[in-house]
Image (cartoon, rainbow, N blue to C red):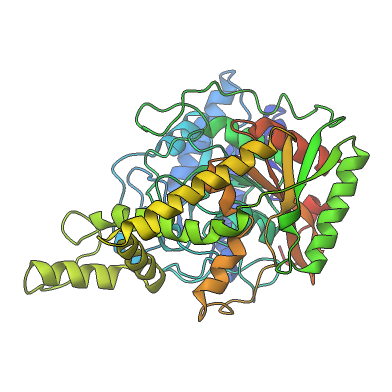
Length: 483
């Protein structure tokens, strides 16, 4: 059962080959047995899962149907879930039980999805390796000595290890696509505003976006269908009709114009990954796509711009965690200043503290114009590059990451080295564009991903290209040894 995709589970439930309750029990037992190796879960919600599974079975018995009805998933631990710990991977929120469900959680529950638990993540989604979690690092099931990517590494590791078929995740600078690449999964970052952020604890509000992590593009289409849509509770949600993502998966790629930016193939890219990307290009050409070299001239400025904007927004968003209203509170404070200092100093880990300080500095008097304002101007230039490119091509293709997953702890002493691993992914967040990473091969036994970007609200186009690619390759079917 654990080897089935979401689509296969939907067909099995519809054909009454097994019940949601039976499947849920199998996967909960598998998580209990195998997750100690991975540390991919922060909380297991066994009672809730069995309750939801029984309810889903009852709904099917009454004639209801749906691809997500009875399907087991997990949520990244920054989506608020009523009455269940929502920790953001931080000591600051270790004791926080959300009083309501995030819109994504509520929508998927209404569709009949079964929540198995909450997955581990970099603290407050700040990281590229899932090593900054207060609950410990997550291990990559392809090699337990390597990182699974971050910040959605818990969701990625759990799905890659076949502990469950799919999970929710979030992407601020590549945190869906990068762990997807590192663990041989398909991960989709939707257009900014496509998926509600209400109830999704914020890191950088103008960059954060929720999306699906699964083994196939077909499964991502199913999960995105349940997540997407306008939400009046979220002022950044866009009132745009949600298409049937699964319906367009069979479209031909004949004549599809694929742009390959020359800037992607620089000295920083592992040549073995570059070769796999070229192989992917050739495969898509066989399916009828037309390849064209393009340029994204301002890509070189994206990382410095991102690492000003994101910390600036983080410093503002995380100011609410002060030891007064909720979250961690220090013991026996001497006065209000001591309460603030010690509560935040004890509650936040080093990476979060680093980004708060960088962000506060960038927003401070005398530096706002020099750093934050300039970074926002660069952001506009990055967006304009994409708009120019999409006048010539339908999608943009390139590597998801410059290197395969590194060893645990290898970049802990050099945060900038970890930041540079986001070079290919952060531009989509700065511009608000949709992007997908799909499996493209292996380097030294570790998975590699190819990234596709598209114009706004063209998630269906991305999923179709990824699906057609996966119909003609088998990278996505590979399973890590021992799982």
